[in-house]
Length: 272
Image 1 (cartoon, rainbow, N blue to C red):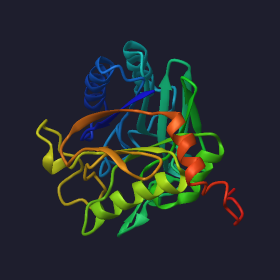
Image 2 (cartoon, rainbow, N blue to C red; image 1 turned 90 degrees about the vertical axis):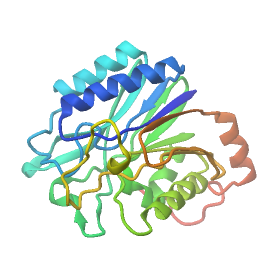
Image 3 (cartoon, rainbow, N blue to C red; image 1 turned 180 degrees about the vertical axis):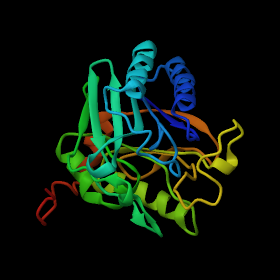
């Protein structure tokens, strides 16, 4: 199965961001991809007031994403915001396309490095996987990468690939942590990992600006990567917008799990 990782910079306007998604989907379809993964906050960048923009999964923005999935023949995974109780939103991944319709609400909220995502966002609680052409895929978002039990839960559910849309916060050592964590999660769950970040707004030349100047909001550093089940980086991007296309081979996952049977060798209780 071929997957496209679309590293973009989104701004505060959901309609403008949809146009960017459409163009990227056409590009991925031309590369014979079956799945395209966009970053977290593809609907609107962090630093934007989220509650006024949030829409239900049957609202106009999600409906437009379904239409572009239908037009391109791709399964699309894109980050959006949906309404939640008490005036908050859910940080939601919409996965939609031929034979696929699912949503994952981010479980682990980014209350770290001086930022409090939970001020505006309600945490999810359900592990979600999808199936594309017989390949099971686990859904995760950004700060989830610091919690290995989620990726092992994907593997326990039969996933051979996890996708990780992100809008990674910048700062000293943050790129190094990103690169370490995505490799570790692939290796300790022995699955492919497609880590798709927002591009660094400072490196974008398409007129996108990310969040407001001076904001502490996590607006992305780029460095998306496709990581193998042995923890090796197979392809990577830099800070600027770009796309990479990679092939997922479930047989490689089976082979790595025979060689490095960390899932079978676990002794501590599995996360619930």
